[in-house]
Amino acid sequence: MGGYLDGEGEPGRGAVFTLVIPLPPATGGLEQGAAPDTADPAGALPPSFRVLVSEDHPANRMVLEILLSQIGAEFHSTEDGQQACEACEVERFDLILMDMQMPVMDGLTAIRQIRRREQERGVPRTPIILVTANAMPEHRNAGVAAGADGFVTKPISVQALLTAMQKLEMAA
Image 1 (tube, rainbow, N blue to C red):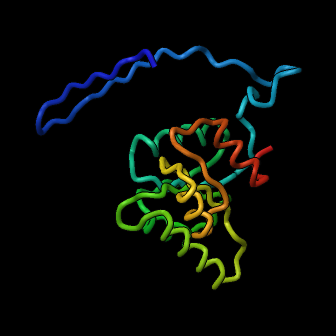
Image 2 (image 1 turned 90 degrees about the horizontal axis):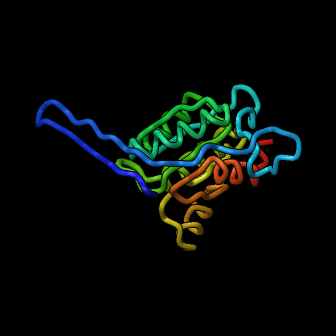
């Protein structure tokens, strides 16, 4: 992408990493005649739209949190499927973004557990989108079989997330 990654560290003290990527300025917006795929994503969701992010990798989790901030969503993040299931026990979410491969409990197991609890309690089904690097048809099929409603591959963009949400009729 024409950038660079640099790092400096000292054992026992920590490290600092710098990533520089020359990106063109963002274009589009809400101007009259703007194409839908270049429209400003801010305000794309109703107020207080709550999203659970379950992603074990800190950088990937941060990317999802930044994307969700850009579209005006509130979010709660977990690092594994078990934590995601526990969060669903105490809070209701409008959407769950679930990684497929995580420690402690993988995303597919977590989805099955969330679906089972929803059914046992007779509560509405929470839309779940798998966000994963596993892009093969068998991965999609496994996600659908577990109870996922959508599928987005990494690396993810605001547009890919909004498109997946629109397929679930969540974003304007």
